[in-house]
Structure formats: structure tokens, C-alpha cells
Length: 282
Image (cartoon, rainbow, N blue to C red; front, top):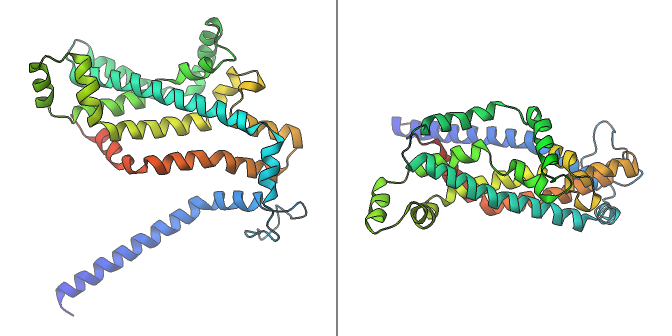
């Protein structure tokens, strides 16, 4: 075997080892979802806590999904969650991109200090801010409303930093050419810069959508009316209605999980480019 052939075999073995490692890690990560699906498809007579666990139910009961759908007003909860998540995404994209553009392209005193102050907020857990945020929301009269859920979390330091880093990768020549043509700052931001940072915006939109879709704590604190409940609050109320009926809870959880998977599949091609843009140094 020649040295070139030996190197080729080593490269193939490394590739096989890499794929086997990824398969092992993926299996571990997907195991909870597989168990969730198996629980949702089991019959009333099945032992959910049998050992060894029963991964393939016998018989398979698809009716658990229909039953879970009919128990609670899922269409209303899905609408509420979609409205809150999409509105939060739109506000976050606008405000974070606007702030990131100012911190990346505009020159003014205190720019670095503002950036570091924004990044410093990432070290403060949300639970620490829960009571002050609720007091402000209460005094503004936003408790038990969509605005009370959306506005306090509409801007975040991660989004500002991601957009700022994406804007720093754009050549300054484009901005100079636009200024020569008579464009102002907002025109440059809206018509030139934003189309060039679409991957970063798609990444931020995906993270924001998933975070809002899965958020439980803040809606639980702010919302009182069941007509405004999100999916996560609706899932939590299932335990109160049926004690601990894991079959219906698992089926409802899979229903709630489906939109986030669909949203991720629609935006996954932007992830790599968007995160890479956020990692480039100035």
C-alpha cells in the first residue's frame, strides 16, 4: 500500500468515526423525543413505567392526539402563541437590527461603553428581573394582555450583538457610495444594509420564535385570562384536568412541538451563515 493510499484509508476511517460519533450523539439527543412519541401512542392498559421500556406500543393508539386536541381549546392557544411569537419576532428584528446598525456603523461617544453595557446584561438571569418587570408591566396597565407578554422581552442583548457583528462584516465602501448618492442613515440601513444581513436576521428570527413559543414563566406571571393562554400554559393545565394522564400530555406536547420543527426546517439554511457572521471580529 502506497503512502497516498494509506492516507486515503486514514481519511475514510476518520470520516466513518465522525459519522458514528454524530450518530451516537444524535441517538442520545433524540431518545427523549422518541419516548415522548411512544408514550403518546400507548393505550390505556399499557404500563408507561414498565422495565425494560416499551419503545414500540402494541397496539398503537392514534386517537390520543384527537382526544388531546378536543380536551382544550388548542386552536385558540395556537393562535395566541403564534400571534405572540410572530409579533415578538418582528419587533425584535426591527429594534435589534436598528441598534446593531447604530453600534456597528455610526461613530459617536460612548459607543463601546453602550455595547459592553448591553453585553453585561446577559449575565443577569431573567428570574432576577422577573419582579421588577412585573411591577413595571403592572403600573403600565399591561397585565393580562398580549402587550404585557411581548414588550418586556422584545429586545435582547444576544440579538443586538448578533446584528452588530453582522453589520461589521459589510464593506464600508458600500456605505460611502450610498452617501455620495445622497442617502441618509435610515435609507442606508433599510435599503442597503438589511438585505445584506438576511442570514443573521433569519437566525435571530428562529431563536426568538422558538424562545417565545416555548416560554412558560413570563406568560404564567402576566396572563390571567384563559382566553389569552399560550400553548405552554394550556399544556400545564392538562395536569390539573386529568391528574397525570401522560398519554394525553405527551400527545399535546408533540402537537405543540410541530410548529417549532417546521419553523426550524424553513430557516435552517440561514443558521450557519448567520452564526458565522456573528462570530467575525471587527
